[in-house]
Image (cartoon, rainbow, N blue to C red; front, side, top):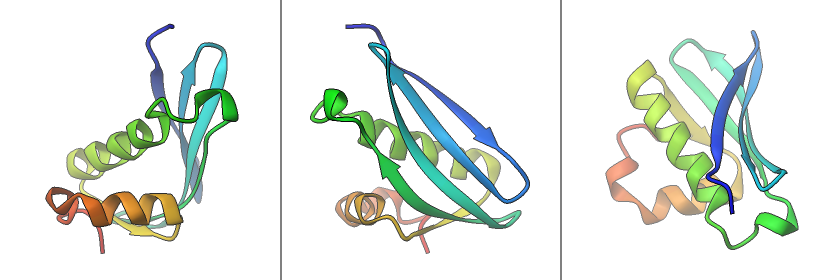
Amino acid sequence: MSEPEITRESGPAKGRYVLVQSGEEAELTFSIVSPTKIIADHTGVPDALRGTGAGRQLVEALVADARSRGFTIIALCPFVKSLAARHPEWQDVFV
């Protein structure tokens, strides 16, 4: 299995993190509220990548970006919200 690559795509109002592994694409989409706040609104993982940790890797990339770029995250996506609840060490970036 090939090593996944995560990229960040961002426009003026929306963006997404994309993980490509074995020809499959998983994504975490977000809406930009302000320069210091985004809303994580959806995580989509194809059946072929379920159980591989793809969704978690996308959330980890989001958390790392929030810390390095200085923004906070509103978790509307149920998957992101449930992971954030299980990781108290991430609470510095979730509102």
